[in-house]
Image (cartoon, rainbow, N blue to C red; front, top):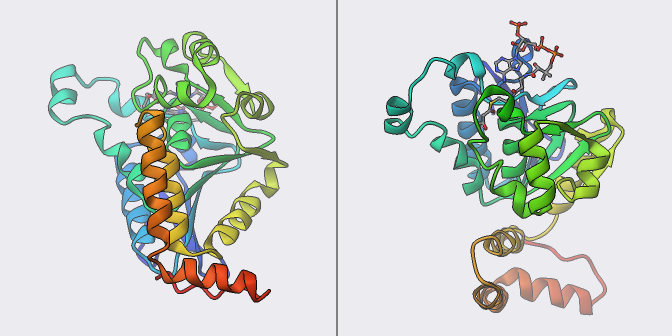
Length: 261
Ligand code: CAA
């Protein structure tokens, strides 16, 4: 968190338990240029590996969470180079984070910006948020999950409408569709996301990581395999000190003292 960044700001909450990454490229509405994404990956990796941090909040600027991939940067690139360099492949690194990542979205979350928000574990939106996949208007298609994660989040019909029309959803529409967990007045959404991050960070890190892992597996596995995976992880929690402490503390009517062991 102490190094200097060009495209992002990285900080910790007052308790030091929640990492906060702010996308900060105001002159391009946080368009996700290559330099920005490399910094973002570095920051998330650093926070994920910091034992004091229990959750991460990813946010943008009041006007834009992110207006998408950098159109000017990619406009004149060609298929073979993009294929050979696996263009946008490095964008998925954020999904490898073991700690929960909460997106706090204000303003535009378009194209890659919407896709980046969907790579997070959940989305809190300010009431000024606008979600969309406008790639169709550029003669291309979503390239970082907009045709995949969106379907899993909102179902086929709503996803089709968004990607084929290029229209934007208001925060309220996004919440109704299930893309967004909750909507807040725009100027409070980051604080609310940090508050949730603090709550998550107040629990055993082993348990929160396993929770996240189990929910994410539901996207990859059949129901039978997913239930099997969940049950094994549940059983595994009984090998942790935190499960013993959590259940003992309940019986003794006191707060649990987690050791993340
Ligand atoms: N890439 C590069 N620059 C961008 C950008 C983007 N995605 N979005 C905005 N900018 C730049 C603008 O070019 C402008 O720069 P200049 O001042 O140098 O002209 C600056 O940010 C401010 O933008 P606007 O003047 O356009 O602001 P506005 O308030 O009038 O409009 C907007 C806001 C509706 C978000 C509009 O900027 C817009 O439509 N942006 C593009 C959205 C888009 O198409 N995103 C998808 C990108 S493709 C993608 O993401 C592929 C993928 O799946 C990974």
